[in-house]
Image (tube, rainbow, N blue to C red; front, side, top):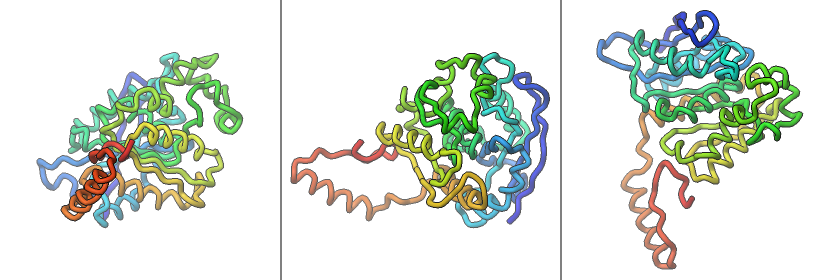
Length: 307
């Protein structure tokens, strides 16, 4: 099975110039006139472009062929080094571009479902950061987010950001996006960890996948671990992987993209993991809990049990 890659130009008044986008179409796309496909909005890293989708097309082909994910359309916009942010001064509005321009235009041009549960977002590095921010700020639009090695700071306020971040993301660069001097409130309002801490209940119906290598040269495992702990302590169901031996770049990323696609596939088509046998064993365990006076905690797939 082999999909094909096509290129599009997306017009927008939110960002300078037209934005190039690469689009993956699965094998058989368009053969059934009424068929609508799930969408994955895949965001590239800071030194990447929309052309990065070419690298991952074989991984997507294999995931579909193996049944890890249903056939879907993948869109990767070329977002430069924007952090997928609406700049504080209004000069560039990349979040607005994605939500108000890219998604509507892709849905009007492609055979893409408009349903939230069929709309996934994911990315790596800068794209991991952008996918988390967009999904956390717009859980009414996205049903699933899969973030690999997200370039998030291990902090809840700007004043906590230290040299292990600033050596690769200098303050001068950040001032171009968050204002000079940096608007700490604006930074916090766009920081995924702070968004999650302030109102975790908004994320209950969002499928969340976090992963990062434990050898990440940018120390991104620290920010990812912070976000994991915030979600865990709030009882928000999510999947988290600290990948042993994985670096920020290199050949590990293809296999990790495949794992993330598998997670998205389980959100798009839930596996039958809670069958009659599971329910029987749950009933036995509930009886044991009652016998020792333990309160019963009903199963809710949106929440971590016992939270």
